[in-house]
Amino acid sequence: MEDNVTLKIGDNSYECPVITGTENEKAFDIRKIRAESGYISYDESYGNTGSCQSEITFINGEEGILRYRGYPIEQLAGSSSFLESTYLIIYGELPSQEQLNLFREKVRRSAEIHVGMENHFDGFPTSSHPMAILSAMLNSLGCYYPEMSSNDRHQDLESFDDAAAVLLSKVRTIAAMTYRMKVGRPFIYPKPDLSYSENFLHMMFSNPYQDFEDKSGLAEALDLFFLLHADHEQNCSTSTVRMVASGGANLFASVSAGVCALWGPLHGGANQAVIKMLQEIHDSGDDGHRFIESAKSGKAKLMGFGHRVYKNYDPRARILGKAAERVLSSIGYENDPLLNIARNLEQAALDDDYFVERKLYPNVDFYSGLILKAAGIPPEFFTVMFAIGRMPGWLANWHEVASNDKARIHRPRQIYQGPAQRDYIPLEQR
Ligand code: SDX
View 1 (tube, protein in one colour):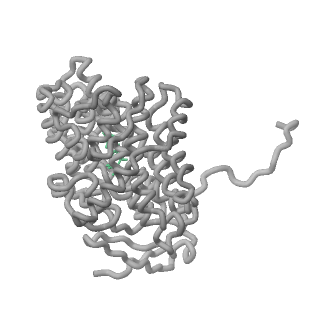
View 2 (cartoon, rainbow, N blue to C red):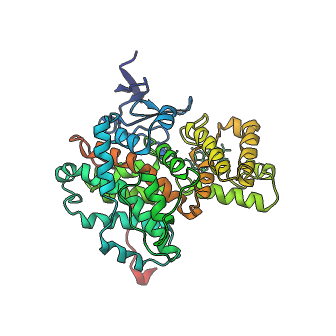
View 3 (tube, rainbow, N blue to C red):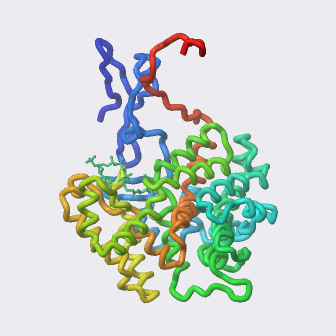
C-alpha cells in the first residue's frame, strides 16, 4: 500500500504523502508542492480535489452509497426522524432517549422569532423569491443573538448548541412567515406541542380561527424529505458554508451564504426546475419522449438527473420516488399526470445510451418536488424546503471548521491568463 505518490516535474521528483479515508478512499497531499516546485495543481470546479477531511457524511458515487456518521441513509430513512438524524449529524452519535427529548425541547422552545423581525417582511416586495428573503433573514437573525454571532471563534463555539437550535427551529418559522407574507395572510405562531414538521405545516397553512389538519400524513412525508436532504458531504452549498466559516465568520453568516449557493438551478434550485419541466412537458401534450430527445441534443437539460458524484442511482431519489407515490395516493392523486411523466422520463433515460453512457440517473431533486407539490408547497418554496433539510449538514460542517484549531482560511490559487504588464495611457491619448 503506497504511503507516498511521487510527482515528477522536469528532472525533479516530489514526494506527496497519501491520505487514506475510513472507506479506503485515497488522496495525495500536495500542500508542499507549490513551495517546493513553484507549480500549483489545476482542477476547475474541484471535481477531483479534496478540500477537507470530514467525519460527517460518506458518499460512494459509483455504488450509490450515502451514510450519515456511518449509518446508511436507507436505515435512517426507515427508522429515524429528521430531528434524531439531525442530532446524529451534528453531534456524531445517535442520541439516547433523554438526549433526544432535551434536543427536541430545545428546538421547540426556539421556534418563535423576535417581533422586531416581523417588520423585516414589510420591506420585501411580495414578488421576492423566498430564497432571497431566507438568506437575508438568516443573516439578520444573528443580529438578535450577538453572543452567538460575535465572529470570535471561541465565543461562537461556546454558544454553538444554542445557535444550532435557534437556526434549526427558526429557519422553518422564517420560511412559513415568508409564505404567509407573500399570500397576504397573517403570521401563525408556532405551537410547542407539535413535532418539527407538524409545526411547519401549522405555521404555513393554519388559520387564526382553525388549525391545519394533516389528514394525509404530510408531516411524516416532510420529515422524511428533510431527513434525506440533511447532509451530502462537500456539495456546492456546504463547501460555501465551510469557505465562509474558514474566514472566522459566525454560523448565521455562514448558513446565509449556504442558502445563496443552494439557490442555483444546477444545485438546490433543481427541484423547482423539475416541476416546471414536468408541467411544461405535460402542457405540451408530450409523454416525455420528445423532451428526452431535446435533452440528448443538448437543447435542454433533464432536470433532476445527473450528479457530480453519483454515477449510479442517487439512493435518496429511490426513497423519494416511493414516498412520492405514497403521498400522492394518500391524497387520491395516484394517477398524478406529472408523476406518470416523471416515471416515463426515468424509464426512457435509464434505457437510453445517451444517459447510460454518461451515467446520468435521477438525483434527489427528481421526485422531491412531487411530494412538496402534494403538500401544497408552492414551487418557488421548493428550494427553501431543501435549505430547511440541509441546515443540519451546514451546522455540522461549520462546527468542523470552527473547532479545528489548525483550520486555515480557504484561499484557492489561479492561473492568470490576462494581459501581460503594460503602462497606463493618459485619458487624452486614448
Ligand atoms: C444537487 O453535489 C451534491 O451533492 C448536490 C446535491 C446535494 O445533496 O447537495 O446532491 C443536490 O444539487 C443535485 C443535482 C441537482 N441538479 C440537477 O438536477 C440539474 C441537472 N443536472 C446537471 O446540470 C448536472 O448533472 C449536474 C450539475 C448535477 C452535474 O454536472 P457535472 O458533474 O458538471 O456534469 P456535466 O455538466 O459536465 O455533464 C457531463 C455530461 C455532459 O454531456 P457531454 O458534454 O459529455 O456530451 O452529461 C450531460 C452534459 O451535457 N448532462 C446532462 C445532464 N447532466 C449532465 N444532459 C442532460 N440532462 C442532464 N441533467
